[in-house]
Amino acid sequence: MSLSYRQPGVVLTDRHFTVPLDHADPAGETIELYAREVVASDKAGQDLPWLLYLQGGPGFGANRFVGKPAWLGRALKEYRVLLLDQRGTGRSTPANRQTLPLRGGPAEQAGYLTRFRADSIVRDCELVRREVTGGAPWTVLGQSFGGFCTVTYLSLAPEGLAAAVITGGLPSLDAHADDVYRAAYPRMERKVAAHYARYPQDVERVRRIAGHLLDREVTLPNGYRLTVEAFQSLGILLGGGEGSHRLHHLLEDAFVRTPDGPALSDAFQEEVQGLLSYASHPLYALVHEAIYGQDARPTAWAAERVRAQFPQFDAAKTLAGDGPLLLTGETVHPWLFDCDPALRPLRETAEHLAARTDWTPLYDPARLAANEVPVAAAVYHDDLYVDTAHSLRTARAVRGLRTWVTDEFEHDGVRAGGPRVLDRLLALTRDEA
Image 1: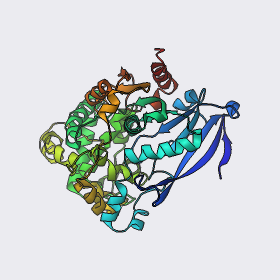
Image 2: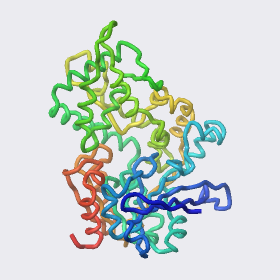
Image 3: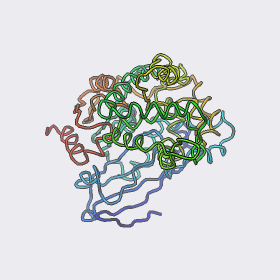
Image 4: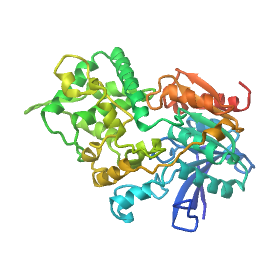
C-alpha cells in the first residue's frame, strides 16, 4: 500500500516493489525495493512524464530531499520524479554486516553480492518502470555511479528510455580496474597539489598528523583504527566543489594540548570518523572494484596493487624527507576491512569478491554505437572520481551522445549547479542548446 504525505511544495509517495534477486531466475527468490515518488504540489493531479533518478555510489540510497532543492526543483517543473534506492541500499533490502550473515558464510555472501551490480539494477528499473508508468518510457538522470548504470541501461534496455542525462558518470566501456586506478592516482596527485597551492599551511599540518599516526595507535570513538593510510584517504574530499575548504577547516583543528602532550582533538576525531566510516554505505567498499569487472580477470584489490606503482604516496618515505604528503581518495583497500568496525566482519566476503573470475560485461559497444536514445552528459574537467579521458572516449562511442565539458563544477556539479546543470543537459537531449 502506497502512503502519500507532504513537504514544502511537494507531495511524496512511498513506493515498494518486489523483484527477483536473480533476474535470470524470475521465479526464484525475491527482494524488496523502495522508492520515493515526488511531484510538485501544484501538479499532483496532472499526468506528467516520469524521471528516474539513479544515485551515485555504489552503495548509497537516493537523496533524502526536503522540499525541492538542487536539481529537483528544475525536474519537478515538468516531471514526476522517482528517487530509487538501488538494491542493497537505503530501504531496498540493505546489504551490510548485520544482514549479510543471513545469506550464510563469506562465500555465500560474495555470491549474493555479485547480483548487486549495474546489470541487476537496470533490470530492476525495467520492472519498476512497467509498474509505475504503465509501460511508457521514462527519462533517467544518473549521477556518478548512477551514470554508469545509465550506460548499462542504454546497453540492455534502451526501449525503456525516452532520454538519458548523465552527470559525472560516463564510465570506460572496457577498462579493467587496474587501468582505472592507473589513471586515478595522477589525478589525486594533481588535486592534492592544487589544495596545497590554495592552503600552503596545510602541508605542515598534514605532515604533523601523519607523523603522529605513525608513532602511535589511534582508535576513534566508534572503534575505527585511524592509520596513516586511512588518514590519507581523506583526500576523497577534494573531489567535491567545497571539498578543499572542508579539508582545510578539518586540518586546522586537529590538535589540542593535554597533560600528556599534543593529542588529536575530540572534535577532529568525531568529524574524521564520520567521513571515513562505511557504516551507512558498506556496499561502496564491497563492490566498488566489482563495478569494473567485465571479464575473467579478478579485480584482486586493484587500487592497492596499483598504488605500489606510485611510491610518492608512501607516507613513511615522504615523512623521512621534507616534501608534502599526498592524500588519496575514491579507492578501496584491504586494510579498510581491518580499520572500519562496520567492515571488519565482511573482510572474507570482500576477499572472495576480489578473487572472482566470472564477471560478465556491463556494456554493449555495438548497441551503444547504434543508440537512438537522446543522451547528454556533463563531463567535469579533471574529475577526481571518474577519469575525463575515459569519459570522452565513451562519449565518442555512444551514437548521438552530446557532452558538456566544464571546469565550472567538480564531481558534485548536479548538486552545486542544481537547476542550471539539469536545464543545460535536458536542452542538449532536445537539440535546444
